[in-house]
Figure (cartoon, rainbow, N blue to C red):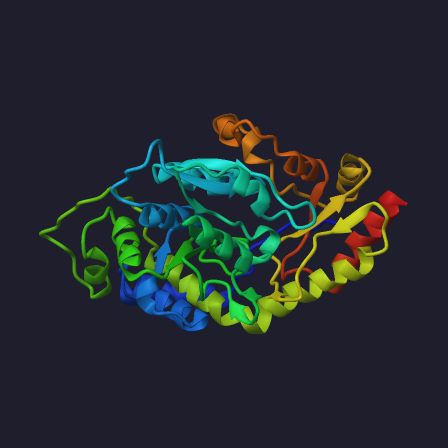
Length: 382
């Protein structure tokens, strides 16, 4: 068996959309197609278009959100800080740093891999202004509790929902409520733009700041480009970046969005349910916990391999041509971010890192493919 761990699911419709932008529109940068993509996502989420800000990557979207929500002027001692679970892709930490802030590594819950709010509370200092819950493996675990925690402590909530596009919490789509919610649309996410990202920022002024910041903070340049013009007498008052999404990326994303509910969501959920059914009785495997309040569209299939058998399982699957991954090496173990752990240990994160294995999951797999992976797991751990 030879499988892909993840893969882009694109085809003729996406190619035709790109052809149309190149040969008919003729403008490849940020423009009307990007605006249409933002309008489509706003309609899908049920939010105002003005609160949707597309970007060229999910990391860029996170950076824009942290920058826009950071209090200015900063009148507290020390650098602005954000509480972030260490079990996340390095993008979460890099985005905080890129926005001129300091990430503070927090521990996670053992059965979900999501932010442990009790541990986050122990790491609160006067210069913390936000928390960044990460919807690990597409799981918006108890996100209402994260918002209540933030309200109690006067913090903002910047959700790293890179895995969670299409997910719902209590029948509300992730990205339809909160302070700021950030998505990734890279090649293997629930939908792709080839590369891309987007943030939904519910404060109108903060959304405007983010929209300007993605175009080097040239004031009003987004509106000008969406109308097919340019800003020739600009003003710039803040730091900005070249983080905008192109028309080509947006064209792919618009087609993908149209495939999400009818094609991608059913396939991902069916395959994840098959994994859960076929692996549930294995004493050396534990599945991550999910809440009945949540409708999860799984981006990755993560399992915990117990009793020290992780490396054994990975080697056995590799011998059969089955790829596996590890999501993720904790950020506090990376050289750049080791100081982010402060003086408090992160024992749960490190224990999970010794157990977590990612198995193949994407809409290109068949039920037989997943059954074959499960058979191989069972054989390796018998």
